[in-house]
Length: 491
Image (tube, rainbow, N blue to C red):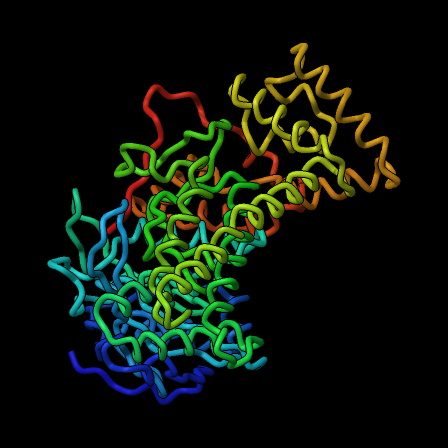
């Protein structure tokens, strides 16, 4: 099957700044064409914000672009090289099943990577087939869009197409390709690759590129690389705090899955926590709980230490001084994370100001939730709307005492009770992508070709703080099961 240039007016306005880095950072790689691409889902609001022509994207030519059969004008397809620590073990990696078409420049002048995920083998496939199954691609679409609606920095999903091919995993599954949109695909693992497999000069070029792309406000002084480290630390502290505040569990926080931009990336085994428990793990491959919910801040710090190590040659000519600068920068993470988390938890409880005992009030609530197996999201929802009887905490002596302390705390601030409730409504989602709801949508789509359940789920997840009547049924808990819920990487 031959490829051809797309000449229709789709609105593509592509640049290729990453491809102007030293060639050691990528390989030229065209997607592998597929027999019969079919557009399954298209993100209309995202497409419009990117300046793309919806009518043309929904045509056969549009589906061909999303499948990699046609290359839009201005694209320069490449696969990016990177490395990373996977469950603590360092290895060479790279885009094993993804191709970066280029960077879309939006009507507002913003720049976003356009990546096809599941588009075939690359130099970095390491024996894999380079393809992706429909279920995991739809899962990433659902979760990434839910994260966006929850106001959590994230890569997004523009489209999913089926390929007309079947692929083998544990069973035969329909193949699919997802179009992922990202501020960039620069990862901690990209810098680890540069540090281990390129020159210091090329490492410097990568760092300068990251600064220009994500932190243009940083000046070009000799301390700019320290500023790069400090900015990445800040963004990760904000991101991880937001994860914790909604009960999101990434599942595979390898260093190649931590972005320099501060966006959430890669949604293979991720899931949202129902019953509050810091030890919650969903990923089938995380057998020892390395990436459990309660460990996520610690792993983020560990990953940032690996990032800091890559920058040592750029931080200072004297190695000891470079190490000290790096240690000082990453030591700020704990305080930055904690302050963001604490501010978010205050908001979830309707608290506007600060008092020293706030943290103990929060910790006591979490302790009770853990002890009694309370649902994380619905507990805060019950507190928001004074539906205390909806929580398993209701009726216990501990909760009654805690509730009195909380009400007294609210009474000591100037803002009225109505303002506190409004703050709680803005801070506590009515709905999250409940695992059983996601699985229900995926099963209907993959096994029966029924996308209506997914469409309804996406609709209610698009405004998680609306607290509308149609969202109520999506707040219900799954039936109890003796088998713990498990997620998979979806490779």
